[in-house]
Amino acid sequence: MRLELKGVRYVYAAGTPFEVEALRGVSLVVEPREVLGIVGSTGSGKSTLVQHMNLLLTPTSGSVLVDGVDARSLQKSELRRRVGLVFQFPEAALFAPTVEEDVAFAPRQLGLDEEEVQERVTESLRVLGAGEFARRSPFALSGGEKRRAAIAGVLAMRPEVLVLDEPTAGLDPATREDLLALILDLREAGISVVLVSHDLDEVAEVADRVCVLHEGMLHAVGTPAEVFYKEPVQAPATVRVVSLVKESRPEIGDPVRFEETLDALRTLQGI
Amino acid sequence: MTSRSLGQFYPVASPVHDLDPRAKIVATAVFVVGLFLIDSTVGLLFVAAALVALVAVSRIPAGTFLRLLRPMFFIVALTVLIQVLFSREGATLLEWGILEIHSGGLRLGFFLALRILLLVSSAGLLTATTAPVALADGIEDLLSPLKRVRFPAHEVAMMMTIALRFIPTLGEEAEKIKGAQAARGADFSRGGPLRRARSLVPVLVPLTVGAFRRADELAEAMESRGYRGGEGRTRYRELRFRKGDAFALAATVLVLLVGILL
Image (tube, rainbow over all chains, first blue to last red; front, side):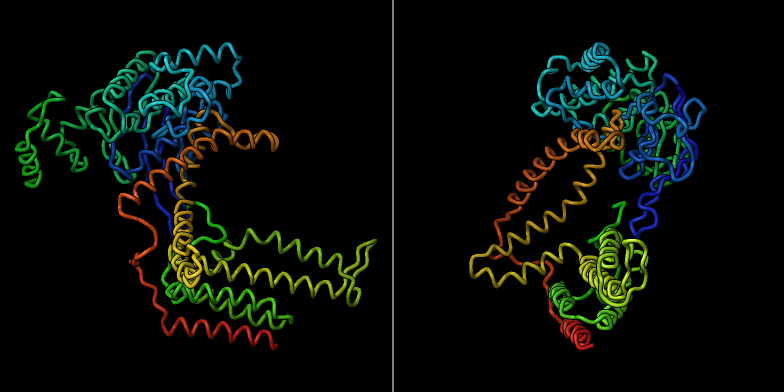
């Protein structure tokens, strides 16, 4: 499915002294079978943006289109099944006595028969490598295990678009690698993935296209190579420094020396 | 943060916001007691006029202040209705089947409604113009004479401060968890009361677990920063009782006296 955001504006606490305009007209498209990275610093509006993708938040103005149809005209439950949203620190919403039961929550809400529910639970847990702790309490797991269980709980709805908000934040390296591999597997299986992160390396590794969000506005859209290396003039300073540093070392993962960073900063100041 | 309701702090700069929290707490207490000593409608109207003037001085927009009071309107309406329908005092104004409306009922209904509104408005003005932390500081100070009889004034105030501080945090957490469960197909508005109560289980369980985790973390953070109770502890914000505070207290008492005599 093709998910499109058109001129989305969102204002928190409108009409009070606490009013904040979190999104100032964002337009973007999640194409079928792609991994779309969304990067930006803290407070740039990433989390607000993703909550518009399944209409947990409705735009103050602008619209969300699913295959060209206004998402507001769709049934909410249908929209939320098709666009699976995994919040930041999703393990904070685990609640059932066992991991299995927790993962079964979403499919049961869909009104599926018990056989189908069990099949989906088993499959989701297997995909996330969480099968071995299926019968344990989610509260007795390690951080990485909890994260796997929570993501399985959304995947069990078999969404067409999976939105992951900072899925690797605070994770051990092994779980992180597994998750990035899972994202690529999902794309192979025909699912679009939206990956929100402030880790540029991670996004460069798996994303087909990247959006840079800055103070509620889209600053750059393109392939990671275009956004990170070709130095679009509209990119924020951090992205420009990264791209300058990486000009001399196109291989992601090469260590960058202190002098190189300093040179890049000097060049940038000269611009 | 998204909804404003009774008891919420409204941060603007005004002479009322600047008053010592102790002066405001005592004035509010005196005001509430005084309200019950006023037995004439004219007296209440006079006090109401003074309170309206005070709200104007506090720079809280009238619309916002009324919205802060909105949760009370149902109780006020109910009070008036009961008085008007069931009081049999004074001249009969209207008779319709078993319904009779008397002038005494109308007068009493108006009087009680005004008293309730004044009661809630004064408390609302206190919390709207005093930051929660300042409020707790003020209460600690007012309770401190009780330390002689081993009353843990500091600990009580600290617990109040922490509780107040974490209301918005827990509220945000609840919103996030609700969002996460809604993304998994939870529906909190469908079905009868029982079904709706059951639909809250997936929110309340993680919220409670999170609250205990937070409490543990907070205790550890406080200990690692050397917190060990109120003994010998100094304050970053010293409370200072100034002339203006004495004046505000005196003015409150004066307005009430006039109200009682009217």
